[in-house]
Image 1 (cartoon, each protein chain N blue to C red):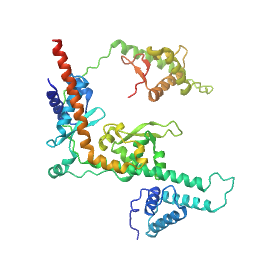
Image 2 (cartoon, chains in turn orange, blue):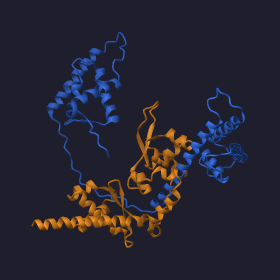
Image 3 (spheres, rainbow over the protein chains, first blue to last red):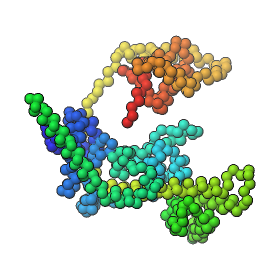
Image 4 (cartoon, each protein chain N blue to C red):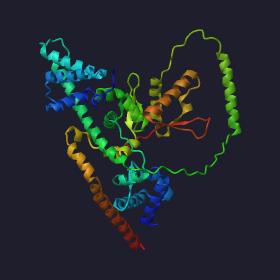
Length: 216
Length: 244
């Protein structure tokens, strides 16, 4: 089985499952090493970057899932005619921002930062599964500590918590340029990086093949 | 007649203050308290004039602003814990911090909008082959369990005689946790079995406390409990630290 075939198999698996599939699960089913699966995943990702593809590969921590591309949403909506998904309210977004950067954090700490009660916003975030109970604070009343979930990463398009921009970017007022940069350059930025990676991986594989040949 | 009007979309008193500061084009660290307080109160009054209930948080902030304003006018007295400058600095810190989180929430909103315009396939329902796992219960184990229960019952009947005095609580979870931690550190990688934590003359209370202490430790510090089969002794290991 070559890498292209492996990429095709993985695509089939991801389509069939629908849900996120972890890389360890893929390795187990395919009986391949992590690097082989990652290499195939990179081929798939490259392939999807083409404008000729309407699907993208979404990575959340170490699991992968397929979704349609945001750019083509307008056309998809035309035919599915589904109800417009509503975003979070401002109160919920503020609460989520605080929890994301201060986690694990108590409701009281969120209330203090916002200057208003956040219990209903927290409840909504819990209902949506964007935050969860992350243990208790060793203080009187043992209040619940909240933290963000994988659903939060998915809802915001982050691969992992490490991808969230540093707090300093916002506290130093650099976010204006940052926001625009994010929207305009995201796809362009990613493309060369993964192309480099692919080239490097290819070189390595070819190198290994040469060594094998030499050995024979 | 009362009718509902939204409070111009302000998320709270801090939001309103930041809005006023931006409207007046002033530096957040150098707020003219008197004029801002007046504008803040005017806004609240205008809501009250429209027959709206003003949320208590807005009123609390009005009181805070007035306190700063009043203290700034009065001569300083030494026994006061916080003077006007301290109170103002505290408010400014709160405002600055809130403003940052407001920016972050805006950034999150942009990202959320992008992600909202994607469609994920729902997992299709695929009937699965369910392997039935036969429940194997060894008759000997069952017998042992039953005997143990019978024995316990006898003990309980003996213990039913009304207590003559109330026994002081001799064990507590915190101490037990410390004790178990020591034992585990000494045992090292091998770990210890639950029975090793108990001694022959142990009271029922102490057994319960030991178990509770273990459960608490599992929750807070990540102990690993291993049991090969039901109804038998189990091994306790300290979780090896692994950074994700």
